[in-house]
Length: 167
Image (cartoon, rainbow, N blue to C red; front, side):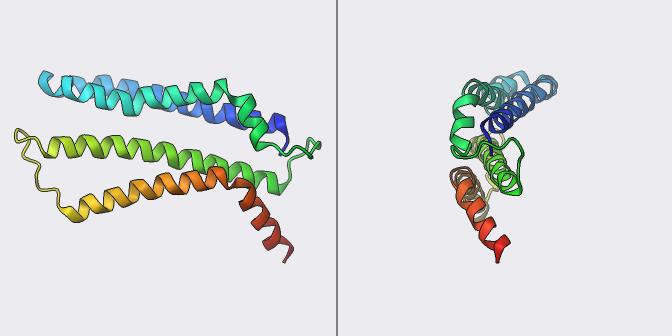
């Protein structure tokens, strides 16, 4: 993958996260109008941080550091402007890894808010059983681990793809 294409991919991912966060803002406003003012005060911080602020902040950070990320993703020895199938495999695994990490953060914020409300006697949601708790923790941890492996191992995945392709 060449440097310019890697920078474009990073900026596209950044714009996706910024738009994802901004898209949740109207949902936050509408949702807060439908609940009790007491609940709205408690929910606004958790929901705003996890679904609006964090994706926008991550998108701005990725956009700001897109040149550095593009250099890290690009092959130093490749000067060709054309993108081959190996570059697509690397770019795809990187994008899927970033998606899984962000999905894991969203799931973690939602799960922590649900857990907090389940312990509140006002809501009486203590029907969350231990297997459900374990399943949520396993799903969130596996999302983080798989996302990190896809991001950090995109070059290894492309090498495996080449071996499978040539076999």
